[in-house]
Image (cartoon, rainbow, N blue to C red; front, side, top):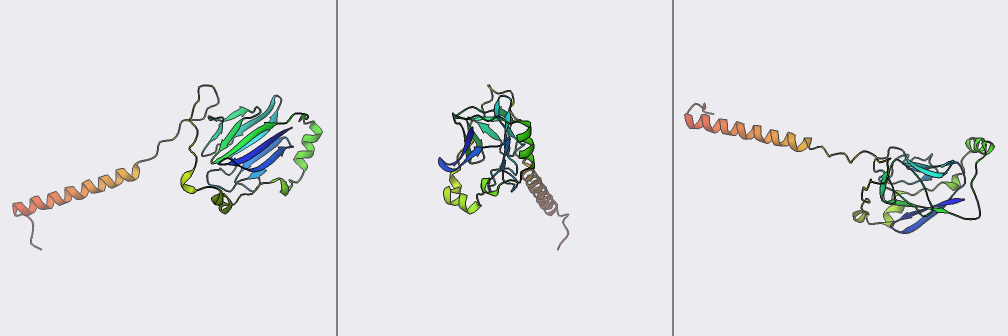
Length: 192
């Protein structure tokens, strides 16, 4: 069996036993672990049982998913791995004495089951605000990529279009004023 320990700034918020084939994490109320925070995407990631164990997969989140400091798209989990999503950390723990083998019958039952609301974690913005100072968000980990072939695209450059438009308007205004001064000095400016 395996567990996820959800932490925020080192504080344990919740333990979730992985007792089904797939666990989803995000802001959407349909996720298994709901975290209402802008740093977490609607469906940020899922953790799924594969033939070799559990794997975390980013779902195209805005802030990315990091495993032990590396930004990843999909990555097999090992005991002790730290998965960062936004400001939150999921600590993956494998417990000895149990195994998680999903039979086809169990998969079918799990897909037909109505999700237990008690297994869903809801954190409101007020609860999260009480736990952290907004100005002290932890920095994102280094985007080291040399060991992982499933690295996402590099960070997007911010657009400077507003600065460019404002600069053009200022230049046009200055050009217009210069033209008026030249006309006035040459005596070609009509009296007002």
